[in-house]
Length: 136
Image (cartoon, rainbow, N blue to C red; front, side, top):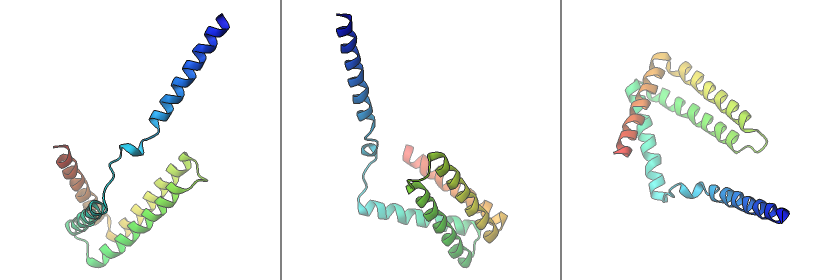
């Protein structure tokens, strides 16, 4: 009788844990799906915000062009790292941080410390403004 009771309890516990894991999986379902138009709008807004930040920082057109190339290169590198199946999560984090530091060094060298700092401050203002707008 005890064996039967223990077996039944174990079966219930196992079933409940499996159901809990299955319920936790659809994290992608919680993300809102955007239409192509909405994605294009977001991409255009991001581009406009970046251009405004460069303008506020006082970057020249040539510097903006070169900086965007550096940023795109770093973004592509981080995407490769993120999609890699051979790296552990810890290695991915380390390599992404290295990529970020490399991007920062290149941008600081290109723009100079003052313009780079002004660019980052402008981006922080934009992010804060976007956060307050969406939370209201």
